[in-house]
Image 1 (cartoon, rainbow, N blue to C red):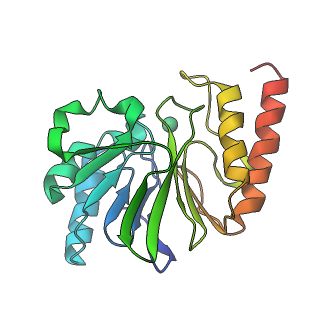
Image 2: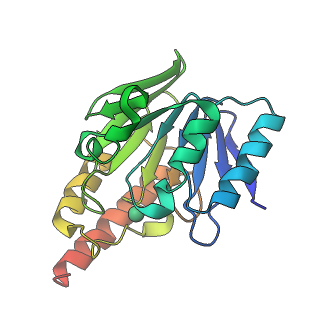
Length: 208
Ligand SMILES: [Zn+2]
């Protein structure tokens, strides 16, 4: 089974287990990342259906398998639109009219109070994005940064300098709640972003 909780009244959090990423449900309509193992997805779907939650959009913060492998299971179940950064457009081209290509600054809207802005954040992976809810000060950071000063690895096709540039974008945001792709979702988001930035600078000075 899985552990779940509300981080804010509008963010439902399913904590990562084994090789699955964290999964978030935003405003009961947008699924952020999908996890990896199919039985995990099926358990979550059963749970969502029991609460009559119908997912309309699935956003992949990037396409590493721990975040994206279950995308087809969720997509088919809810007939949802899958949203990915334009660098991943080819990879998900088979979804045709169920694919929405995102670029920097695009906005995904649940209603007037719940909107997510797309921030292109390469470095951990080339098609990586973060999602920012400016009104409620919530950041979904994928594997760009994690809580407690951690950062996504850059040794699997990533680039530490690109990651630092991406974290610099996040430093400009006002973040109360940080919802990362792994590890805990936390309050005092700004503080955690700053710690991640310092750590990334340290890693780059080691020449990694
Ligand atoms: Zn990743």
